[in-house]
Amino acid sequence: MEEIRREWPGAVELRVTVDGEPARALAYPALVGRPEPGDTVLLNTTALAMGLGTGGYAMVVAVPDRLPPDPTGPGHLVKARYTPLQATVLGADEQDSPHHELLAEADSLDGAPVLVADLHSALPALLSGLLLERPGTRAVYVMPDGGALPSWFSMSIAQLKEAGVLAACVTVGQAFGGDLETVTVHTGLLAARLVLDADVIILAQGPGNLGTGTRWGFSGVSAGEAVNAAAVLGGRPVASLRVSSGDARERHQGISHHSLTAYGRVALARADVPVPLLPGAFGAGVAAQAEPLAERHDLVPVPVDGLEEALRADEKAWGVRMSTMGRRLDGDLEYFLACAAAGRHTASLL
Image (cartoon, rainbow, N blue to C red; front, side, top):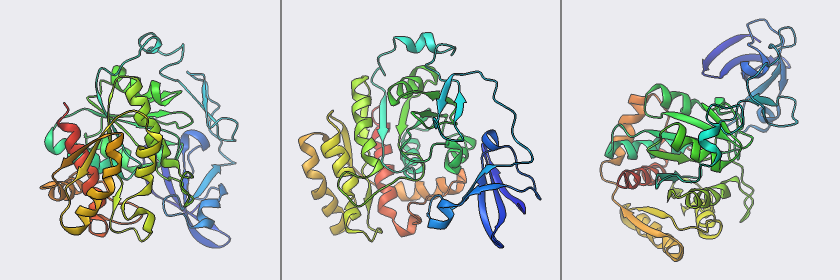
């Protein structure tokens, strides 16, 4: 290991040498210990070798000469179970938690809006639209386990919390590292509302979604399942559309097939679907693509005036990078406008 390049809560980015060549690596000190310059580190180079855009790091598996102390608790939830880096955490919903009594019979979100999106990159843009209309709204992010398992991988979460625009993160299922941990999406939503006092709950994948180019083989089907969970708990689901003009893949042009499948087939409960009023032929095409969703959901046209300016201002003020699949605001503005429009509509429900 040559040097520490940068760090954020829960993660340290390193410059390492692999087979004589420099490379980026990422360590989670809580799991593997804190590497220091000159250390020999054991690496998993799978993502690096595959050239993954989101996770193209070598991952530190261990610092053999300086192992972290054995965990002593509290907590009995084991996440990333039966992997070499399984982590024991205190679940908000487990018996030893101070929140267990509150959550034991909890069954309602009391109508709180649950803003659902496919990609992790939607998170800053959703907040931008929400806070443009309702400054000071207390938003809590619930991160399921369809993408990265450690929330520490996300610089966006750390930056948004530091900027004071995201109150907290709840990691659910096999995901871990949030301000609260829970066993399921359902208890994650309840914890966000009842323990963390969320005005709005945002639920989207962590970084590193997975897709296979098939109708059903993509991790974003969890967006449809999130709509169902929000509804069964008495929340108000809002389904943010994944829209793109910059993605070269036909299945993601206009409204992505991910949104059409997740909301049109997987989501069995009714949700508000904000449809951004984008200009020109592209906007008309998006509106037409959304029409079949009206059989299951309530389509809500949402103006996008002022949203671009808000996105650009917030990116600078919050220190967060608005980026999806490597495309910035100028490379796929419609994507970010659609997310911000969903945030704008959600603000109107408060």
